[in-house]
Length: 158
Image (cartoon, rainbow, N blue to C red; front, side, top):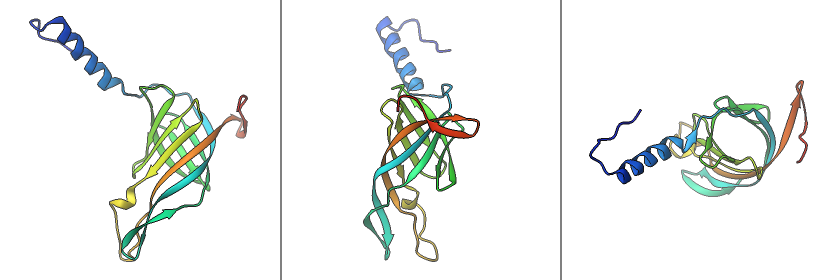
């Protein structure tokens, strides 16, 4: 509960209350209904470490499964899952997700499009073998999937 000094004009109290509400409301940990999406990135660019320097790179497109379920969300590529913590933004259709190792994802659940960045390689390595993880930015499009008894099928309206 917030208390404001009585001698503040009502206008300042209102502005302060609005600022507090906006600050706490930008990303809500609101209950998210579990939804599963099959996705394909249409463009993936970034940087790769080559001979002790970063060089421009294009990466192969990939298919993946995105499961949105609040703090228990995941991204699965080639059977390998990455756990994500997702939150609904102040714009209800925009979902923001992060993992523990520098991957950030934004997804528009109405337009079925998203962006993903992976930037861990910029702050780690190079190790003994002079290898660093690439830095990538992907743009992707998804189709909502209905999951019934461990079977997946396209959801109506895709």
